[in-house]
Structure formats: C-alpha cells, structure tokens
Picture (spheres, rainbow, N blue to C red):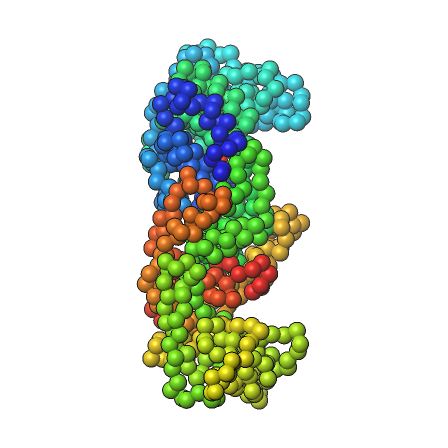
Length: 589
Ligand code: ATP
Ligand code: MG
Ligand code: MG
C-alpha cells in the first residue's frame, strides 16, 4: 500500500518517532489561495494528510498567502471545502500572513547577521549578476550593494517598509553563495514591493507594503509550525539547499524537506489562466463545469472523493512525475462506482413499446435489487402494457449478429419474468422516425418453458400511478479537447477544443426507484471501499469518504448505460443528470 512501502517510508525512517528524533509527525498542505484546487493537488493532499495519519501525527492546512496579487476570498473557502470533501480534517488551518511580524523580525535579524542586504538593481542587472540566466553560464558577479554596511541595509530595509521606494526599486536579498552551482544560492530575493494596486492584503489590509517571497517564507513558516516532514513536488528539489541554508543561518528549527513527483494529467488544462479563458469565452459553463479537472468540477460531475483517493493510491508515490491519461482516471472512477453505487434503469432516448397481448391495466410488480451488495436492499417497479426502451435497442431490419429487439426477434426486459418478441412497428410519415414498436409477451399459457432470449435490455414502465417514468435531461460529457496535449496546439489550446464535448439527452426516463435513491443518498460506500482496500487499490490511511449531502451524492448506475448523478442546476420541475462515466471505455460516446 502506498504509505507502507518505498519512498515515503524511507522519508519517515530518516526522521521517525521510534528513533527519538521527533515526538510526532507534523505535515502541512500549503496551497497558494490563488485558484481552485485541481486533480494534481489531490495527490499533495493525500500524501500530506495520509503520511501524518499513518504515523499518528497531524496535518495542517496552510494558506500560503504572501502574494496579495492574485489571492481571493473565494479561493480560501473553496480550498478548505475541497480538502474536507476529500475526507481530511486539518488539525489547524493556518495562514502564512499570520506570521508577517515574525517573518519581518527574522528578516531584520538576517540583515544584522550580515546574511541579507538591500539591493537597488534592476531586473536585468540581477539576471546579469546571475550569469545571464539559467543555462547561459556567463561568469556570475556580486551585486554592488552586497557588501554595504549592515546598518545601512537595515536602515534601507526599514525605509522600504515605510514607503521610501516604489515597485522594482529595491528588494531585500539573501547573502548566499554565488560560487555554488545551485541557482537557489545566488542571493535570492527575500522581500519585494508589489505594484501599488496589489499591495492590499486580504487579511492584513494596508499594514504592509513589502511582502516576503516564497523562498523566504515557506521554510520559516514550516519551522514556526514545527513541521517535521515538509513534503513538496520535485520542482523544489534545488530549493532544498536554500530552505536549509535559511533555517541554519537564523538558527531556527529545521524541518526536513523531501520531494515527490507531480501528478500531471494529459488531455486537459489545469492552469488558472486557461480555465478563466474557457469560462469567459463560454466553452464551459463555469469553474465547476464537469468537463474540467478542478476538484469542484469533479465533485459536480459526481466523481466520489473515494474514487479520487483510490486513483492517487493506485499511482503510488515516487520521485518521478506521473503523466496520466484521462482514460486511466476514468477507469479508477468506474471501478469505484461499480462497488459503491446503487443501480436503476434509465433510458436515454426512449422508444415506446406496446405489448399487445396484455390488458390495458396490466400490472406486475417486479422486485429489483439496488446492487449486488445485499446491504443496499431492493425495490419494486411496475411492469405495464406500455414500456419505454432505448431507441438504439431496436432495429427495423434484423440480422444474425444482432441480439436486441427487431421484428420477429425475442429479447428479455431486465427482471421481467418473460421475454417479448417484436411483431411490428409504426413510423411517423413525415420524419420517418419509428414511433411505436408492437410486441407480444412470451408467457407460455400451458406452463411450458418460455423462449430463452439471447440478451436483456433495460426499460421503464408507463405507470403514472407509480410515478413512472421520471423525466430527466441528461448531460453526457466527452473530452473537452481533441488531443492529448492541448497546450501544444500551434494555434493555442482553444484551437484544440472538441466541438462535441457535451451531448444533451432532453427526454431521458428513469424508473421510479430513483425516488428512493434520492432520499437515501449518500449511499454508504464502506463495503465497496473495503474491497478496494483489500485489493490494494485504496489506502486505509487516507481519509474516509465524508460525502457532503450535495446533489452530486445522488448517484446511480443506469444499467447498461452509464453512471449518473444529479446536477446542481436541477430545479423542482427540471431534473438534470450528469453522466459521470460510461460503463465501459468506448461505450456511450
Ligand atoms: P498550480 O501551479 O498547478 O496551481 P502550484 O505549484 O502553484 O500548482 P499550489 O497551488 O501552491 O501549487 O499547491 C499547493 C501544493 O500542492 C504544493 O505543495 C504543490 O507542490 C502541490 N501540487 C500542486 N500541483 C501538484 C500536482 N500536479 N501534483 C502534485 N502536487 C501538486
Ligand atoms: Mg504556486
Ligand atoms: Mg497554484
């Protein structure tokens, strides 16, 4: 299982409770509140919370809110909501900005220790000092302000704080080691002045006009919070040196930074800027459009949090970046839903079938289990003279390789005692569309063995007295992009949009068992989760699903069709369903 073997286990052994190095494990998930969380973040969440949980420790949710430029209230709210939705309860919710005073004091301390200085160089000058940028390898040289007296830097730093300088005119830089081959040691910035319009902070208002950088803040906030294992993605591997350098220079508690590979999914875009464009140009409905891979979108689409955790668990944790195709994610979702949601019959595109031999008021009540899982129980549905079947389950002309309904052909209606045989059909003379299929009920009157159908199809009865059918609009989703790498399209990612990414079925019909599904939602997932855990597809250390009672928790398998959930745009008069995933890979496209 993911947290028991390999990489994370080694990380734990390096600093464990058993060795006496620490009293307890403390980790954090540290998002910048500048956008919505996406599928990749679920890996970071699962790792940080899972690692702490496995070792009896604690995990915090820390908002890394040191850059007021793109932070917004809605992101703070949505991020916390999504962490909880995935089933994790942060021991504390913290804010880097709560440490602004302490960070500032340490910045002054760093200057006093002659390990930081105020620099007035332009951006271009700083790049030149660093050898012309990464890869250019020209000789590096010191900033002219590097060796100014400590007292002068201190005075200038205070002046910076109090408004003497404008954006880009001055910054506080760490005095590291230009001879080091690691660019993270080339006198990184510690404090900057943001543009006038980005100076007001969400939590501290107008108090500050200088803000600490990621490089200065992250390790110190980890240190303040007593983070024992600071787990981050491999882009920060080179930063480990500066992380440790700063903790050492300031003689503060030094958390242990270790890096794991990012989880990237191909065939979609996750960057905030691109999603904004999709929303603004009307390619998707909103940030939580089910075709997106933000966590709010996955929630709206009906993907259960446990399915996301299973997916992350299956991938495992290594240093290598994982690039995953969306299809692989869908396979995990399918496997999870198969074990955890009830079943019903839903007809996407109904075709009326009249079973001529039955009385007009014929009524059988048929018992249908909600699932193979006996704990889900069963319900009863009417079988009547008129039923609706899937239009695609009928053909005007039969053939030998066709096993569903056609004139002269016999099929079973799922759970109905005897099969039916089509006898004739009617067509609309204008459109040529088939309007009614006539059939006979193959119930032998003499008690002999009935015909055995080659296949069974789903159906819904017409019985207003039993609230059947229940009408719905179904939204089925296909990939939003045509290629696996939309960002690489020569004309930009928008040129790669799939024009058929959403298919609407306005006249879908559901059997009356839906009412019970709706009332009993969310259905308990434990039995299914246990199976996945036993099979190693799900980590018991990660959180238990705490389904919030939103509309998306009303989920079911439409037998032979797909998995569905209720969309949040549903009203009293208009039931809207989202197709979560098809039953099999290519079906239902
Ligand atoms: P993005 O640029 O995609 O928004 P980010 O790198 O800016 O991501 P934050 O939003 O600050 O990251 O994310 C918080 C945490 O989640 C960080 O520790 C980050 O490393 C981790 N994280 C972000 N994206 C991924 C990913 N694709 N896979 C694994 N972890 C990720
Ligand atoms: Mg970031
Ligand atoms: Mg981000």
